[in-house]
Length: 72
Figure 1 (cartoon, rainbow, N blue to C red):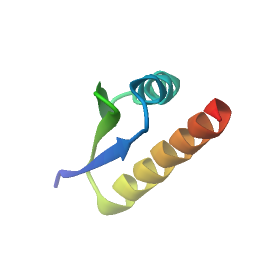
Figure 2 (figure 1 turned 60 degrees about the horizontal axis):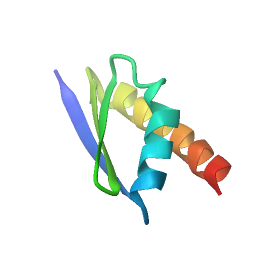
Figure 3 (figure 1 turned 90 degrees about the vertical axis):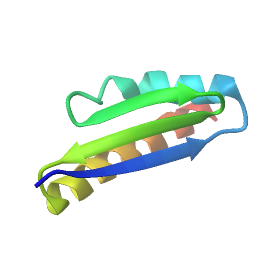
């Protein structure tokens, strides 16, 4: 079974979106495909199970939170 989730993060500026994207892209590996579109980061997360998907989403959002905090 394949499960996927799309997360869309909206930022006030394109610069902020790019900064957070660059800080989190390193951790994407095979589980997350992310891209910047204007002031948004769009992340597609794929997994084989619900528990694995939730773990990956949690990890990704933790990385985003750190990147946002550093940028402030």
